[in-house]
View (cartoon, rainbow, N blue to C red):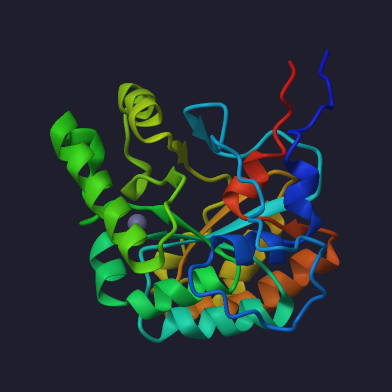
Length: 256
Ligand SMILES: [Zn+2]
């Protein structure tokens, strides 16, 4: 028998992404897009101390109609800003699994991602196959990327995604212990990197989406960005709502 209890911070997280956004940003230029919930006096919104109960997720077990849109391998100098414009126009929040080398190269885009209420996760510094590496090698990949994200944005990443989805169970376990990161895989992969055309990318994402689903695409490909307006509009029309990965993780039932 399953309980339907949700994480106690769920309500707070869902109250408004503006709270989340402004608490996370170090250069809090507040827009006037949405009315601010009543968090005043400069008190930051409380953050969960740990994102995710388990070592690894392909999706989050919830019946709530939330999904996470995740973008890997950026930031990209032109495609990522274009994507951010599309997300902003629809008030959709996403998660970016950035590569450390790009994070160092494009710190302004990193800051824009955070300032607009999105989340950034760790996708290693050089995009290697972690499953074939020593523990020290993996540790260094994650640490350098972590530090690059903090250095650019002031905000620490709270989850990681292994390049190619390649990671061992043992690695997932010690990474969770050492870094606090759950390993975030995906439930829908439209294989956008094979450039099947933006219509195909959109239809694969829309048909694959389920509650708690994690959608994988790459913001380094122009065709993927082209697919986003139609993808997002169709998903919204089907009743889905968008959460960042840690917001989605907070929806996992805490009982069992
Ligand atoms: Zn990647």
